[in-house]
Length: 363
Ligand SMILES: [Zn+2]
Ligand SMILES: [Zn+2]
Image (cartoon, rainbow, N blue to C red; front, top):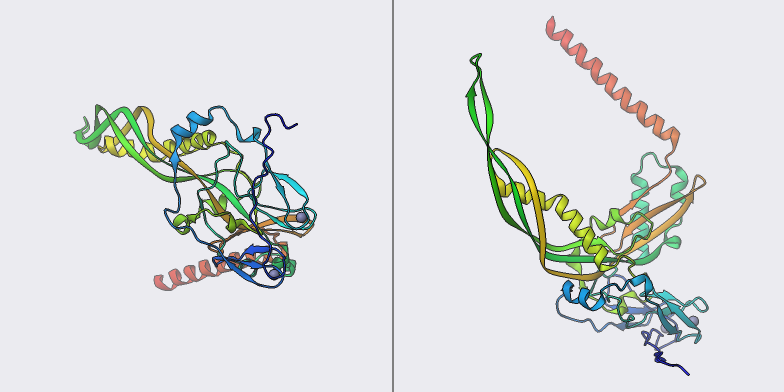
């Protein structure tokens, strides 16, 4: 007996090719799925409407207080290909028996579903080309870098990100300094600030501020900082077919704390400073409250390459939308030393030319 348990199996996306029954995969830069074997394409019924719908944070908090994503189970999925059952907390995964693509169409209660997605625009080939161009630019990289088979080794994954919008209202107390000229005893004139106590309140609008929903442990922050959200489209599970996508592990409450920490450190302080005005400014106390807080989950595409060179594992990331490369590489000590010598030679020659010129002018 299944007392109280939900015996209903959540639906998974049908991803078998209508022609050959192999797996369909979202083809980067298109709006269709392509069969990995015969190339048959199947159009995605693209949803229209706002790209990212941020939901009221208060309502979500009220309904999910104290519930943590780490305590929520995965989704049980039966593979269409081999009928094996897999339980996974990922938004998209691969069947370990037949490599079938598993994409659940719904998430368990309490898990925030993605609202928007930046679909892959760059395919594996272009990611590999971007890597090769990047390697060529590294003047001091080891030669063996050029032998890395990037096309083979890249994997594609979607990063979970939170976006928050809100109005931050900050009540402050501080001092405004107006400079005026003061004549000193010795006759000199100096500018000194006259300080006046001020207090007030200033609003700081926060619009889709992005923070990471999971640390993938691959240094993804470098890519996240440069993301362009204008290409966001409404989420559809089809965009995940054939790629991996992990569930977020930073709960919305922790993500909101992070947003507050970031905006209060810089933007709000700047707004308070501007509001106080004057030639010089002193900020005393501030108290910030947030209203109209809304949030959403967004997925961003990433090509990930790990390669071994000089006896070490290295990581390179390619933004799946822009092809921008971020990563580390082993430095060739001989090339590096030669480059340093080149700089020194240029500097010394420049210096000698300068001395020679000075000498000539003095004659
Ligand atoms: Zn096919
Ligand atoms: Zn399977």
